[in-house]
Image (cartoon, rainbow, N blue to C red; front, side, top):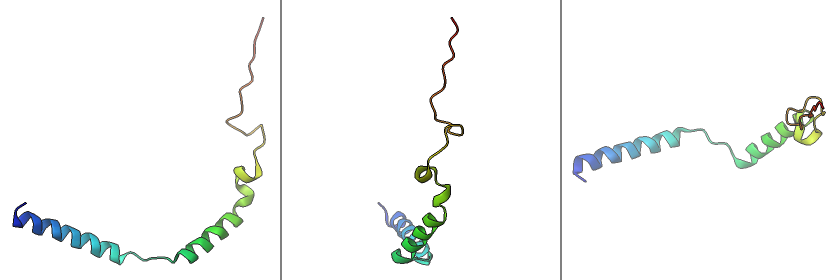
Length: 68
């Protein structure tokens, strides 16, 4: 690797590090509390928790109609 290409590579690394340093961080405890609150607020609309009625379930087995 020539010195000019290594300088370009290092400039890209520095640029990436500056970008990552500028990102606002959220504490894990705060993110977990917000996620828990979101889940609690939306639990009534979650079909994995409340189930689905068979008439609105798009994955229900299709009825087979056979004529003899």
